Length: 141
Image 1 (cartoon, one colour):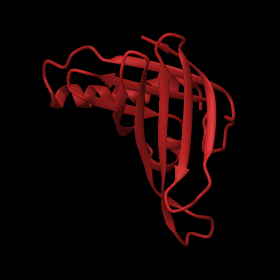
Image 2: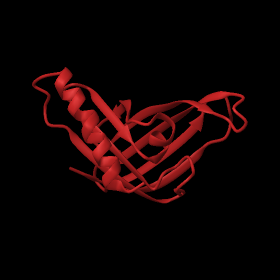
Image 3: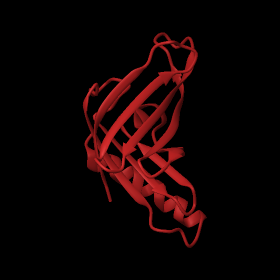
Image 4: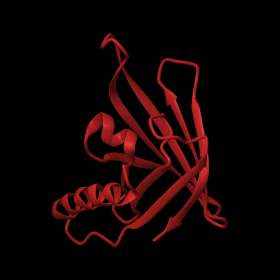
């Protein structure tokens, strides 16, 4: 999936949020490209787009994993926001395992370092001990 397609889906989700909440402050968009630990077809996608409206406490996330399992962007939340970093959290739910036997949730945490633009992403399947990580950078718009 190309980044413009992700941004387009996110724009649609934002339009719906704006219709539901008039006077929405202009959101920040984080366009993140992961170069370490990311690969198409894995739990860490090479690109992630995060919309954040601090005034309304709105977070919307989109990437190829989100689209593959949910078909639309997902809601997230701000976990940490201080002078150094902002950390977002979101879940991708109802992922069916191979063979269709069990649904699981993948929990994501993405951290943007404000001074450098560095971005790290961690994915953990709930109920399992393993996890996945990726690193890259984001442009904040």
